[in-house]
Image 1: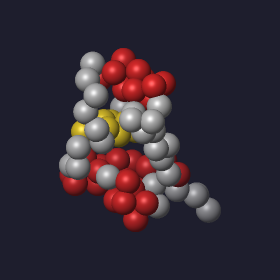
Image 2: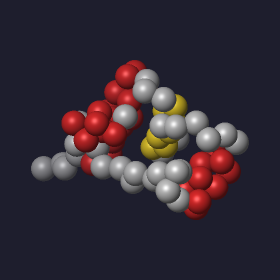
Image 3: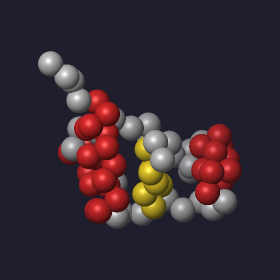
Length: 69
């Protein structure tokens, strides 16, 4: 997922639940589980490597960050 987002110039916060108790607790509170990778963008979520879900998030991200001339 990280490589996909980077390749598509989508900015993201990478939170490692193995290295951060805070990140682990945040994911557990949001999802009730510790399944990774997990992506949240606005009202969208993507669990695991889901190409269609990632495409939808990428499109939404680009629309939200597009510079209007």
